[in-house]
Amino acid sequence: MARPPNPGPLSPLLLLLLPLLVPLPLGAADPLPTEGRLGNNCIQARRKCQVDPVCSAAYHHLNSCTSSISTPSATQELLVPEDCREAAQHLRNSSLMSCTCHRRMKNQVACLDIYWTVHLARSLGDYELDVSPYEDTVTRKPWKMNLSKLNMLKPDSDLCLKFAMLCTLNDKCDRLRKAYVEACSGSHCQRHTCLRQLRIFFERASEPHAQGLLLCPCAQADQGCGQRRRNTIAPSCALPSGAPNCLELQSLCVADPLCRSRLVDFQTHCHPLDILGTCATEQSRCLRAYMGMIGTAMTPNFVSNVNISVALSCTCRGSGNLQEECEQLEESFSYNPCLMEAIAVKMRFHSQLFSQDWADSTFSVMERQNKNPALTPQPGVPSLFLCTLTLILLLSLW
Image (cartoon, rainbow, N blue to C red; front, side, top):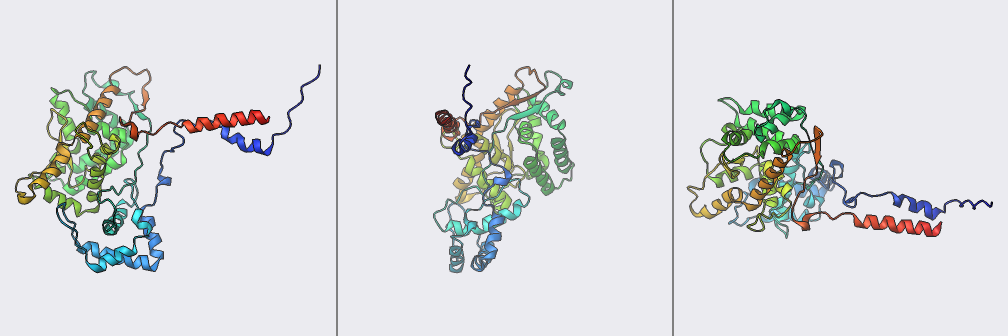
C-alpha cells in the first residue's frame, strides 16, 4: 500500500500565522489595567518638566501663584494675575496637562500637589474643571471570600457581624482594622490620627472586605445590626463635634489637596444622570469614590440605624446668600439617586452571598458592575473571528 506523502516543512508564512491560533479569552482585546501600565502620573510628568528650563521655570512660578490665589466657589469667577496666566500658557503643551495620580501610589499626596498646581493652567482653557485627578483603574476580578470559619457564629447572626468576622479572619484586614479602631477609640481620641488610619484602611484593605464592613445589609427592624454598620467608621471620633456649616467644611476640604481630590472624584463618578439612579460612570466607581471620602474632613456616614440613607455631618443653617449652594452640596450626598442606587445594589449583592449554602468553603463570584450596557465592555468577538480566519488560511495553504 502506498504511504501518503509526508507534508513538507511549514512555510515561513505559516510559522508567522501559528501564534494567532492561540485562543484569546473573551474581553482580551481590552486588557485589565495594572500598576505598571498606569498612564502619565504627575510625578513622572514633573520630572520631565524639570529637564526643560522653560517648563521648570513656568511650573515654579505657577506654584507660587496657586498658593496666593484662593479657590473660588461655584458662583465666583477665578481671578488670575497676568503673570500667572503667562506661566500657565507655557505649560499648555507639557505632559503635566494630562497627568493623573493613583489612590494606592506611594507618593499620592506629592502627586496630587503637582496635579492641583497645574490645575490653574487647565482652568484657563477648555478643560473640564470637575474631573477626577485619579487614574481610572477599575478591574473586574472575581469576588473571593473564605467562609470556612463562619460556623463559629450563630446561624441567625446578622450580616454586619459576619462581615466583621470575615475581616478578623483575614490577617491584613484585621491588622488595618485594629489600627484605626485603636486610633479612634477612647475619650481623648486625636481626630486627625483617626481619620488618617481610616484612610489607610479603605485604601489598603481588599475591596470586598472594606465594602462588606461598610455596606453590610441589615433587616429594617434589626437596630443592633444597623448600629454596627454606623459605627464602622467610629463616628464619635471621626466626625466633627457639633454640626459645622457645610460650605465651611467644603472650604476646609478644598484647602487640602487630598480631600479636594477625593471630593472631585466623588462629584465625577457619583453624578446622577436622572432620578432613576443612573450614574455618570459605573456604580462600582461611584462606590469607590464614596469610600474615598471616608477619612477626610468631609467624611459621610449613615444617618440612622434603620435605613441606608447617608449624609455629611454638617448643616446649612447660617449660609445666608449661599443657602442654595450649600443645600446642593448637602444633597449631593443625602439625596443622590446614583449613590443610593449603588449602595442598594451592593447591599443586595452582599445579601445574596449568604442566601444559599455553598458547597465549597471558598467561593468566587463575578459581580456585575453596572446595568448600563453602554458602559459595559463588549466581548472579544473580533479575536474569535481572527482565529477562525487564520485557521482557514492555514488549511488552504497546507
